Amino acid sequence: MDDVVRHEIEKMRILKVKELQRRYRELFGEESPSSNAQHLFRRLAWRLQAEAEGDLSERARERAGQLASDADLRLRAPRRFWQQLRNGNNSGSEAITARDRRLPAVGTILTRPYQGRTITVTVLDEGFSHDGQTYRSLSAIAHRATGTRWNGFLFFGLLNGRGQK
Image 1: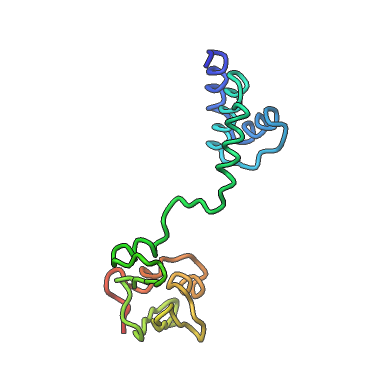
Image 2: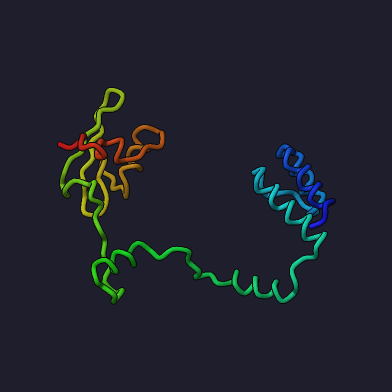
């Protein structure tokens, strides 16, 4: 990379988001889809280098397109895979659901006083029951009851053994 490009990139390090977005518009000819300074800086630095050094070859572009079209590409194996592997079930046909060790037994009633009222939850086989509705997580119930995001285990005292009746 030549000194002119390096100097241009170093000058961009101190720019604010609005200035980076303006520079993005100049280099790419369109509005920036991002307002994240780090992302904008990286995209701009790449563009400056690509203009100075040359862009990807047509062959590289085609290969990138092929790789990007793999819709079934996963970065991690599903939890079910690791659970089946631990339990020695390699068939894949049998769904194994490991129960979280922090959860009390099915049928247990959890209570939590909150702002002058008591929030009551029943632990089910699949989820939790609260006010006649079934929820997938304790966090969803805590959010519904309080209006703010909570870790459900923390809210109901299951991280330190409290909250069970």
